[in-house]
Length: 296
Image 1 (cartoon, rainbow, N blue to C red):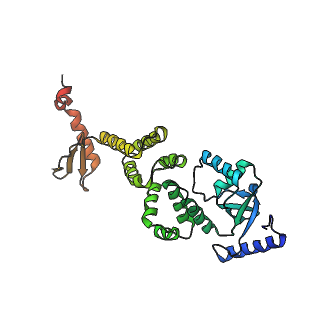
Image 2 (cartoon, helix red, strand yellow; image 1 turned 180 degrees about the horizontal axis):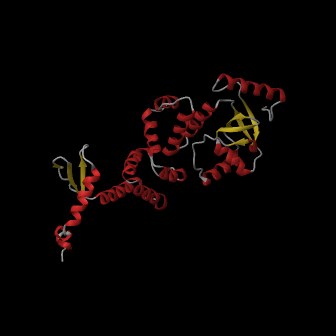
Image 3 (cartoon, one colour; image 1 turned 30 degrees about the vertical axis):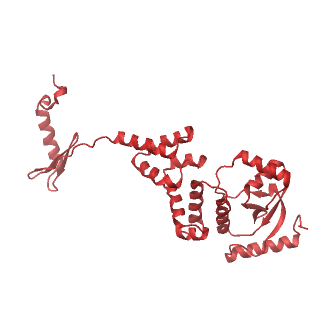
């Protein structure tokens, strides 16, 4: 029969093993066990990649647990005098909904590095969005042992292109990622690069369309078409740019749309040129240069 609580001697030995493992840099210690743990003594993982928990599915899971019991223990690790979730947050939340005091748990002392990695792998089986994966991948590469996309992909057992495409989502501007933080399903890895490219052209247009995606349910392909149309309308025809005209001993001048651009030679004082030009413009009749539509 499983113990409901560990004896003080066993607990002391476990804490010694945990400390020893942390000092030696081990990922998972050999000493692990099954135990009924107080639900309120467990904290959610700071490395949890899932940003949204479906309330209806949690209620359905709670009903199943209430009827037939917990099919699979959750996984936790000791942290100080408490425990931290590694896998099974939905089952833990369902127990809280049912008002259960205790939950069966697989207790595994482990390093932060392995806790981060297992938080990802445990959730990969549960339909994480590409954005949730991207955030967890980035977190692991910043704080974990594997600093490259290829190394992380090998550790997860996936092709490196999967990791690479998901991480395109991290390149989105902050105001767009703030929307994805609450609605991570809006943009997938397949379309991330297009949204990034359009954001570089005009982030405000992309931001407005992504808000529309969140509020009205606009799909990604339709959103990209709308963004493309708005960018094309804003850009319009580019102004004609004439070839530079050499000004002997002074520099050159070029017509660029509605602008005259002067390039002054190094040995010439630009302030003197400016003064001469201003005096000349003051001396002429501006009406001589008016376009036909503005003449009386």
